[in-house]
Image (cartoon, rainbow, N blue to C red; front, side, top):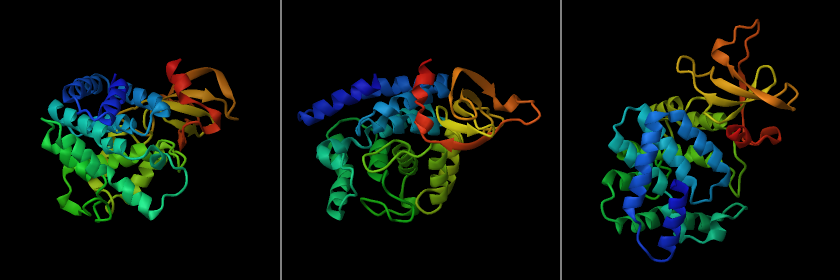
Length: 298
C-alpha cells in the first residue's frame, strides 16, 4: 500500500497537485502498528521490496529503518509516525529533478551535484504547501544531508545545531542508499554498510546515534545474506536478543556455494556441535547469484 501511495504522490505532484497528507498518515500508522507487533516482519518486507524500488521509493526503506530506530529508542507511537513520515518524504524533492540526472551512471560533475543538492529545498517547497505536517518532520527533511562536522548541505550545519530527527535521518538515509544498487555504484552488504557508518561516527554522524542504529537493526540485519564459518551461505531470519551475532538463519547453500535443494533453519545461538557455526562475514544481495527474496517467499 505504501509503494502504491508513493506512485500516486509522484503522479499528483508532477501534475501540479498537492500532497494528500491524510493518505500518507494512514499508511504510516499501519507501518508503525506493524513494527510494534513484529519488528522483524516489516524489515523482511523492506528487504523483499528493495530490488524493485525506484529512486523515489528509496523513502520506503528509510521509513522502515527510521521506525525501527525510533522503536528501539523507546519513542511513543506519535513520534514513530513522524519518523515514518520523515523517511517516506525526505527525497520527495527529487520528483522535480530531471530523471536522466538521477539515473546517470557516470560520476556527476560539480554542476550536476549542485543541482542534485537542490532536492532538499525543492522537497521543502512541496511540503510547506501541505498543511498540518509536523515541524519536526520538516526539520528532519531539511537536515537529512547535514553532517556533524559541517561538511553536509544545504546549510553546512554542525554538531548540536542538527536536530535529533536530522541526525537519525542522515544515518538511515545513508544506510538505505549504500545497501541498494545505484546507477553509479554497486550495493554493499548491510554488514559493510554498518561498518562504514561506524567508521564515520563522530565525524559525519553522531557517534551514540550510530551505535543505537546498529543495535536497532542488528549487526547482520534481518533479510541479509551472510557466509558462515562452515562456508555455507545463509539468510538472517530473526535476531537473538541475547547475542546479536548469533541470529537464527536459513542455510541456503552447501559449503561450495551450490544451492541447497531444501534450505534448512539453524539457530546459531543453540548450535551445540563440536565446532559451532558462526557468521564469518556479511554478503551483498545477489552474492553467488542468489536472490534472497526467493527464499523469503518460499
